[in-house]
Amino acid sequence: MSGSKERIGAARCMKCGFCMSVCPVYQEDRVESHVARGRNLLIRLAEEEKVPDPDTYASSLDICLLCGRCQAVCPAGVPSPAINVQARHARLATQGLSLRQRLVYRGMVKHRSLMARMLGLAALIPGLNHNDGVPIRHMADATTLFSGGLFLPGISRPFLSKRLSRPVAPPQGRPASGRVAYFPGCGFEFFFSQTGYDIAHALALAGVEVVCPDNLTCCGMAVYNAGDGKTARELAAQNIEALLPYDHVITGCATCGSTLKRYGQWFESDKRMKSKARDFSEKVSDFSQFLVSQDFQPVRNGAAPVKITYHEPCHLKWYQGVGDFPRQLLQALDGVELIEMENADACCGLGGAFGIHHREISRSIQEKKIRAIEKTGADIVATACPGCMIQLMDGIRRHGLPMDVVHVGQLL
Image (cartoon, rainbow, N blue to C red):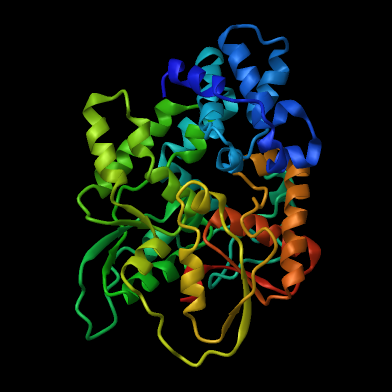
C-alpha cells in the first residue's frame, strides 16, 4: 500500500465510533487514541507532520491487537488494521530498527537454522522442554521474564520438520488422490510439534499425501506487522519458492494462513514477484477449509461423550472468513457436544508481541474469554491457532480450570 492510498484510507474514517463498541483494547482502557477512530486521526496528522506528541503517536500505533474487529463493523469498510501497519512501516523507515528488532527480526527470525539451533539448545534446559507432546505444567519461572509473565509451552523435541521429514501417506490400502504441501509455521515447528504432527495425519486421512517441504521459514507476520517490510518480504520470497511447485498449500495456523494468503499484497510494487506471489496466495487454505472442501468425514470410533467449546481465532474469522469450517469438523466427531461460548469470536488478547509488551491489558481481555469458557462447563477448549492456544493455556492455568486446550486437528 503506497503512502497516498494510506492517506485516502485514513481520511475515509467518519469518526462514527462504531469501532469503540468492539475494540478489545478500548473496552479496557477507554483511551481515544487506542481505538481506530482516534488512531486514524493521529495517522493523518503524522502524514501532515502535525503530530502534537510523538510518544502518544508511537503508543497509539503499538497498542493495537490488529484483531480486525474495527474493520468488520465499520460502515465505510475502512481497513484500519492495514492503515496502522503501514503507518508502522512509515515510522520505522524514518527511525530505523531498534537494536532488539535487529537482533530478533534480522538476526534470528530471518535465519531459521540459527533460531532452530538456539531453541534446540534451550530445550536441553530442564523445564523448557516437554515429552510426548505434553508440556511441563510447572515450568521454570525464569521463562516468564522473556514473555512478560506469559507462560509459554515447552520447547518441542524433536522439532516438527524432523518428525515430518518423510511424506505422510493416506491410510494403508487407500491410494492418494493428490499431494499437498504442509506449512507448519513457527508455533507448531518449535512448541506444538505433536499437534502439528496430528494435523498432518488428519490431512492424510482425507486421502492426500502430505509433504512438509525443506527450506521453509517464518511466515513473516510478526516482522511485517512491526514495520519491517524488507525482512518480511525476504521471508515470504523464501516460502514462495519452496511451496510454489505444489497445487495446494495447507496450514493449521490461522495467523500463518492469513499471512500466506496476503503475500500477493506484499509485493504490489515488485514487478518480478507480484504475479508469482498472487498465484501462490491463491493456493493457500486453512486445514479446516481444505478438509471441508474435500468432504472429509472423521472415522466413526464410538468415542466417549465429551463437551467441547470453540474459540474463533481473529485471523481465521475476520481475516480469512472461514470461521465455520472448524465447527463443521467438530460437529462431525463421535460423542462431541459442541457448546457455544459467549462471544466465541472475541479476541483472546494475545496478538503476538502485544500479549508480551502489554501484558496487563492482554490479561484483562483474556479474563473475559476465560470467564466465557468457564460458563460452558466444557471439558475441552478447541481452537485453530497456536497463538490462541498459548493465551488460553495461560489463562486456564492461572485460573486452575479443569479443562484442556487443543487444536481442532488433534481431535480428528
